[in-house]
Image (cartoon, rainbow, N blue to C red; front, side, top):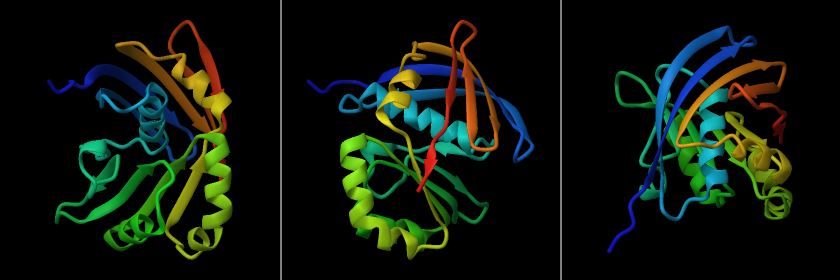
Length: 177
């Protein structure tokens, strides 16, 4: 018997003071059976950082040919490709060739540091690639906000993200590699 995804609902109010983006969105996050809660919450954080009415979750882990999030234009082209993890050079090359802008969120402190040292030259070779790194401690704090129904307020300014669920407040500072 196949395991089903766990569904989470999130109402997210975003105030991005740097990009002048202010919106409230109701999101549905399906946690794949093989996906950790940390990874799912990192997907949500990625959505918050690039919040837009056009930014959508994809089939994610169920589709090798899609990122975790994307913005598609009216002609079917990809404007923004957002991925998570520590991909091989082949996937970065594919993303860069298919999209105008590529964003990667790296996590898992020990493995991410090793991956970055090996991939630094490749990363620097792509002008339209942005890599963010979130350490294990910040990811654990983010995961502490998880509930099946979430209501989050997010304020972004100068590289800092303040998140609140009404009873908990969290400050996150992803590192740009």
